[in-house]
Length: 174
Image (tube, rainbow, N blue to C red):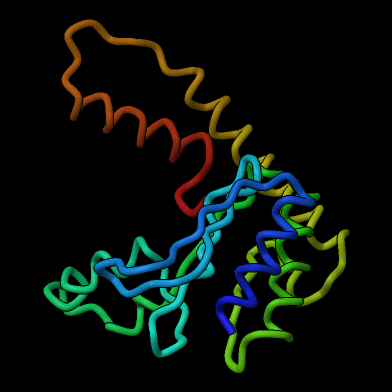
């Protein structure tokens, strides 16, 4: 039902003013589907191989690399999308879209949502996670802002100095 999914997702993208790209016709990876790009968000790949399994155009291009590096070949059937900079509203819209598509088009669909919204549908849980990420980024920016340039410093020395500062300011496990 990839064609039906593509048609429905195009309509949704138009309604939400999200960019999208259709992948059809002959291509070297034999992928068909749609890649959507909400503002501020990494692309969301809803593309599949002829056997119906979802596969990102990015991972399908690297099948051989996975094999050469003795990585689990099943990893090509995974994809990820960072929504942090798109904001909570977009994150919620994406999760709701994926829940709808899961119910309508997929017999097997797993999603790990670091924001916790997929599992809970609780905006407070998502807000707490977004706030946590924002606080961590702010701490990192503050720490990096304290780094003074050192004349004739090598790149390696600068990296070591930045690492020491971050460990001091943020702790070893943060």
